[in-house]
Length: 370
Image (cartoon, rainbow, N blue to C red):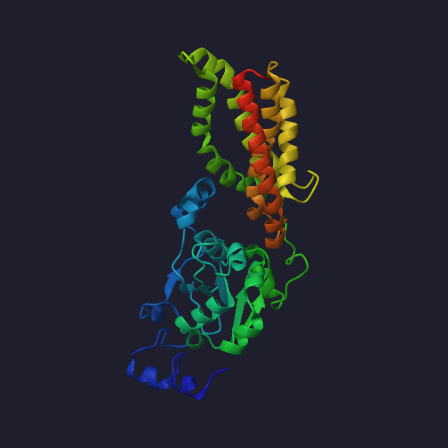
């Protein structure tokens, strides 16, 4: 698909642009190799090899809110020494997604078109509307991609398909959208297979290892509130009309400090680990079940307590576990947007009821009624 102007220029720019050596945003020889890319300001060259900082960034993304700002500048990138016949892969501006793609393309010369997804990964961005048809069309135009490749073919991640209308893209730009495999590791085999994905390439897996990697992203944010919870517990059990009795604060509060940790871990760790075997599809119910079982086991280690506190334990901590498990919905292949919204409607109501009943039980305990 080379027009006469492009053919006469001997490169990927129109003849009138190539003649005065101005205004062309792609390489001016055919193919646009490493030397030509040096003259380009808009196209950054990247490697398939991840640096130590890249690898450490991936770790920090799993452990903190660092992932919220772990981004790559949207635009067109040259991986290796791409030519005008090299494939164009579409990715998100979340750097972990970008790094996963480029590392999987080791040994392949390619173009990587990064959409502005506000630092969100492909799958979530497609659901939120930032990995979108409109953004793809805009980036094709903004980067002058049609001038840099001879073919009209884009390879889009399968998990981004919900946000992309192939029909609208080809109508607006002339580029045909091919939906690649689920996993970047299968891209080489996908290309070798004639740009056709096998059933295995289309299958989303969510094994134990993948679930475990994601658990710190839910556990750590919740544990940031643990010192506040611990302070409230110690004050509650230590406060008396005569002042704070530290012995009562420690001995009365210690079991509840333990139960607080267990509630979080039951929902944010145990539930993901046993996700396929815990009954029900709703994560809030899975977490509630995990919380109840955890309380049953831990309470065997704790001495008897007043009825009001027992009521508090069986209402509050399973609810905490359920809430922690519910946060995991965005990390899994088990749920969809409509299902999550439906689940939230009844889960939030249940949390409010459990919270109010738990508060009443604490009031009854302090008043000495139960």
